[in-house]
Amino acid sequence: MREARRMMLKSGAAAVALPLVTAVARGAEPVAPLPVAVIGPGGMGRSHLEHLARRDDVRVAWVCDVDADRLAAAKSLVVEAGHDEPQGSADLRDVLADKDVKAVWIATPDHWHGPAAILAADAGKHVYVEKPACHNFREGRLMVEAARRNRIAMQVGTQARSAPMIRRAIDKLRAGAIGEVIVAKAWNSQRRGSIGKEKPSDPPASLAYDQWVGPAAWQPYQKNLLPGVWRFWRNFGCGDIGNDGVHEIDIARFGLGVDEHPDRVAGLGGKYFFDDDQEFPDTQVCVWEWPGAGGSTKRRQLVFEQRDWSPYVQEGHENGNAFYGTKGMLTLGKRTGWQLYSERNKLIDEEVGSVDLIAHHDDFLDSVRTAIAGGEPRRTHADIEEGHRSAALVHLGNIACRLARTLHFDAAAERIIGDDEAQALLTRAYRAGHWAVPRGV
Ligand SMILES: NC(=O)c1ccc[n+]([C@@H]2O[C@H](COP(=O)([O-])OP(=O)(O)OC[C@H]3O[C@@H](n4cnc5c(N)ncnc54)[C@H](O)[C@@H]3O)[C@@H](O)[C@H]2O)c1
Image (cartoon, rainbow, N blue to C red):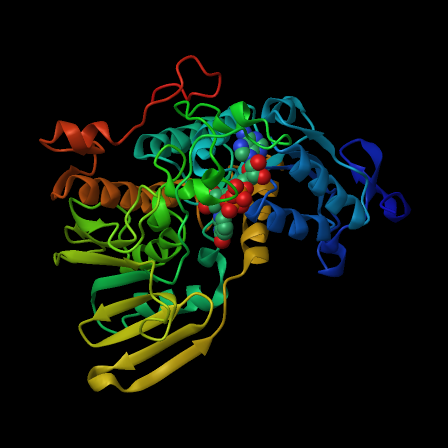
């Protein structure tokens, strides 16, 4: 079917056969479909694949999954969307070795984000990597360095950054609609289920579990690691604060207008509700503070609240944000919209809207095309530096909660001051000698 849509386009000196693209429908110059790959087309990766398979300006050349069933399903999805069957592998190195592939989507569990993204960048691929950007603080910095030294675009999957509704709310804040924003609040308040208690057992026959663990410290398989449950295990995930929480934390940091790391971090929390195997708090409050930013000398504060046992929404939004200014307040839900209140709580403006994954893909692909055309890749809306800074809040908040003490942070040096135990938690234990362990961790 794709063959039927081929047309002749000029590319440099040679005329080559290339498919028609949606750019034509948008009135833009036709462009050759970009060969891309999806690594980890499981839950969120499958959503990416569905969107990518609907686009005419990309061609899904590879799908890669360590689970043979998911790999087969991913191939079928592309074929059912009317395209040629993509190549498939359980080993991401096969994808990275293909010189044709220009960009990769990485939607693996968190422990693979940094290692896979760094390998992809060093193979010259542009990278869209899911949130949280990295499993631990140190990997975030190494990802930024890998993006810059290879001059590639690296977009993090906090898609709210590209939603017009959210960007308009942030514009209001920047324009002073609620005065000076001194405090922002982000919350993750929802009812989750227990992950139960399990003992090690044999992995499913379809799963190459050794490859799934990859560079993480070895841990035997057990049923409540998959699917998706790994996020509640320290070896593989970052807890719900790094899962749903990081979306809101990223929006809050965006609205607060702080581009640096905080200099002080506090946190308290624990498993106050669930009695199961999960290793992260179900109840958590973190506070990060910055010295004056954006020309202001006032300190700023971001507060995060998490209650994974709440069968009700909080302040009008299940997961949400509030921005507290000296002249008003703005509340925001990324799937609902925002409300702007002046002094004495008068509602003066509002908008209904939601996040926009396609816009986030568009933003990334636009930067990729700029780079391929020979330019410096434009920093995307959720460039890896932004992703690292928001993931850093997750990691520092988790460390503060785990150790139950306030951290003092040297933002420029990316070091925790006077606390060796906390400093050691900025990185992780890796599987010795594994090919995907990033250099410099
Ligand atoms: N942006 C969003 O709104 C959003 C929503 C949900 C999940 N996510 C993120 O997407 C990522 C995946 O989450 P999920 O819930 O889909 O998890 P999942 O466990 O359902 O899917 C992950 C997939 O990656 C595969 N995988 C693991 N290691 C691999 C490797 N080395 N190479 C290739 N494939 C590998 C797994 O087999 C699985 O199919 C996480 O980082 C999560 O935070 C983002």
